[in-house]
Image (cartoon, rainbow, N blue to C red; front, side):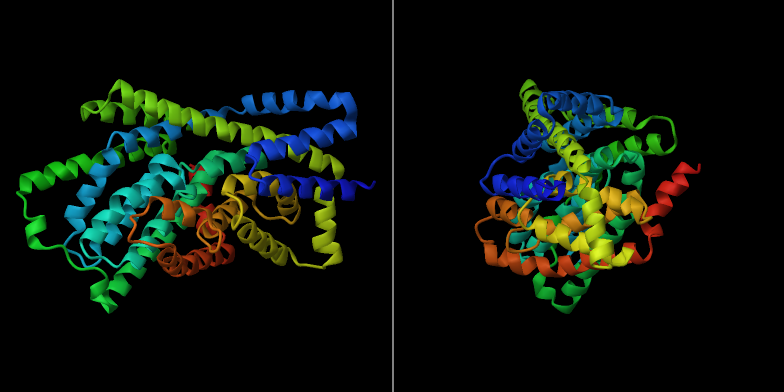
Length: 440
């Protein structure tokens, strides 16, 4: 049996196991272990140990549980909810102000957690009921929450970029900095879209009444102070890192410690809060660690078989594609796979194949990491099987049906695709900030 056929069988076996509902890390790890034993015999038992020590020697992995902990403790302690109340009061007089405030909220939650699920949960359970109660159009606000929550995998500290950095051997700090400008550009497009839609059709977003916003200035300032806490945590954490005072791991520790202190100062730090946050942090962190271990083992087998060279030969020699056409083909494959898999599953499947080819073609791997992450955002919310669509349906109020969710997302898909096109045409949108900070 040729190595090419073995590689195809490995990939097909993995996809079959994934379609049966098996856990992603179990399906990938099982195929990798089975192929290793069949190909290399008893010596293959050393591969899991090699992958484990390779993972444990990668110091930035310590940031993963710290950032996840920070996001969960801010959400579970109600600090994120305080932030929404502040946005409601201070943006309430603007046409579409709550929708605009929700986009800002999604960006901040993304910066606090790095997972789109966290932003989706807060947006669907807090923002959506509030906006529905005030007469906002359900299709508009469904799109706002879905589009805004998807920023969680682009705006630092993005957990997906940590995984990409591990597999592609790229500095996580450079990947995070590369995601800042595209993420803010995308958020800005969302805000402009909401403003224009609400000006064209004011019935989509009624202004909050004076009675609802009538409160003493002292209370408004107190609410502002409560909502500023997440900003202070984020800017302290990232500011110390950008100025070179703290390392990446130290910055994550600053963020986790600051979030715990903030919860204590609010009088919300309890034993139940700590245990629940620790339980969720451990569950998510372990899931990602198993995924990376499986990806490392699978990638080692695939690379050893020459699958990367086979794909290179297919794209460049057989199909005679230009480097840019190869990149576009990769982006299309991400969108198609994203209809069935989440971002981490896609990453561990295709990164071992695509990253060496991208490097061979002469493209910057940090830039490609941003492209991959933005394409994942589209895949997350693209019907019929977008991952976030079903999360949204499960968490949204009953007034919002699956048809409303499908209708709501297309303008945001177009804006995301436009952002991807801009980053492909102007790579410095992603690369300027990491190069500037690295050069300081």
